[in-house]
Length: 261
Image 1: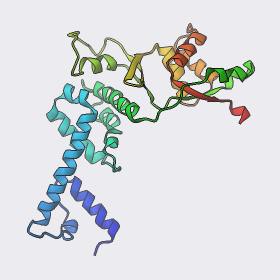
Image 2: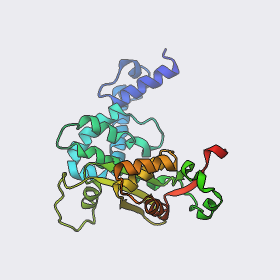
Image 3: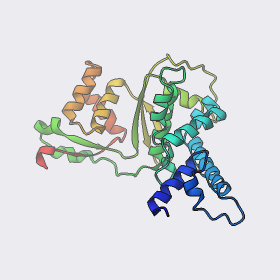
Image 4: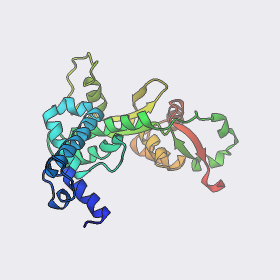
């Protein structure tokens, strides 16, 4: 007799693999249907549910690769990263990382960054909301403490950076795309801000120094440290203007001064 935990593990193995382990088949009551067949029905439902969710999450990759290839790579991904949540939304969480490895060095390696962009879009859709930033609160901060400021960024915001033009690729592969412009992988990099608004997700290419400034703040670095990151990218960047644009986009929602906590 298998212990419950061992039984559960054997069942998962049988549901994910192409063959049913004898240890689990022996525990299944046939009742007119062979245990292997019962498990195969469950396996098919589990796999189809996983793949359909993955396709819905990464429609641009499906369009770029074709459905047959996507389903094949999707099954490989499912074996490497089986769902560990009752919420199917999270099945795509590791897909970009998986493609990084599987497609490294190939002509399709840009798929990983497109997938990273699509996953960021999905995260933004379901992230929590947050009140807008109260700029007046900064008025009580002494100028000597400005460099130590640490900001909280909006929970429904993500940043995606790629050496490929991922935003242009994504836009060209939307169902309502009308442009016939030809996109080449060497036409430029992308530094994209994704942030949810009331009725849409705003997608905006940021200058590289601005992107570095916001990315550093998102990592929890101080304003002084973030400014240094931006200056490393572009020593000529106007930091006051860059910070002003970041604030105006609603990306920052709160601040702290660690020395005062």
